[in-house]
Amino acid sequence: MDLTTYITAISRKAEKINDHPFWVIVSKEISDHVRSWRFIILIGLIALTCLGSLYTALTNIGEAVKPNDPEGAFFFLKLFTITDGTLPSYVVFVGFLGPLLGIGLGFDAVNSEQNKGTLSRIMSQPIHRDYLLNAKFVAALVVISVLFFALAFLVTGLGMITIGIPPAPGEFMRILVFILLSILYVAFWLNLSILFSVRFRQAATSALSAIAVWVFFSVFYGMIVNVIARVIQPGAMAGPGKMLAHQKFILFLQDLSPSQLFSDATLTLLMPSVRSLGPLTRAQVVGAIPSPLPLGQSLLLVWPQLTGLIAVTVICFALSYVYFMKKEIRSR
Image 1: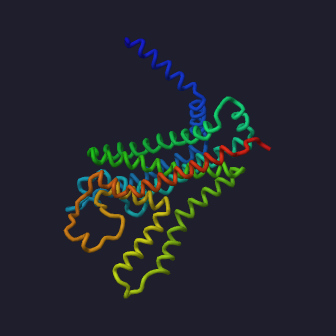
Image 2 (image 1 turned 90 degrees about the horizontal axis):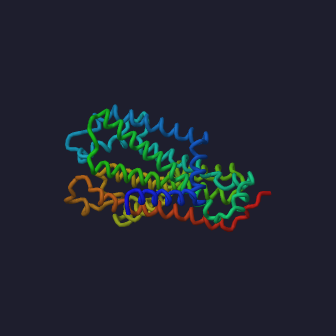
């Protein structure tokens, strides 16, 4: 096959893919997201806060580097984690504002179409019903992925220009994994908001429900866990086994929060000196060398957190799928 024939075949295949109803809906949803004012406001808010945290990191990066620092070989990663207290770090901003982006893109994905009467019109076409829900999720995920890659590469590029040091291959791989983890975290909130948009008829109800869950896990859940920890705390004469069991139970309660899972995973990936996310006995600490972990070991350390985030994301999507397949789509 010569080059011209090969290019013609590829073009025809691309045209067939683009003409597929699923990808037509995806491109239409991406266009709607990018042109909507709520997306422009959210992206502006996240971009400004991330640039502010980058400015804070750059002005304090000289003080963050100390002699005999085990993370000295990962100097570039400090751009994403350090702060002087005036503004939170880039990681904290992504963990706090990322859910708002997911909720903003998904809270009216289905109920707004039903209230406007366009849902029954779309379903009257020769389109599988699940195409619509899948396309809305894929379109929002594409927008979120492009945004997070652009923001992280913007921070990386500005950091290289300012400090004049490019990231090492190991640091760049950790940044890529951090971006993928951020996309997964926001995808969970996106799926949760789509689930509420399928269950509730009014967009305001689904938006308030999703925001209520976000506020509960971001603000109140930590307080509740602290109260439980204080109530069930063993006495001063309790043995080491009982104290260790109590600490493990509190960590288990904290890991039920998606925000805590994301925080633990990102800090472990961007701070290679973190060697454990739980209590260690004295026997486990003796002889340990305070050196940074390789990327593979850090991934093994946060594998339970990654599995938890993937599980809750898949559960929310599966519930949305089941409810949407059984949903009455005719508008009243």
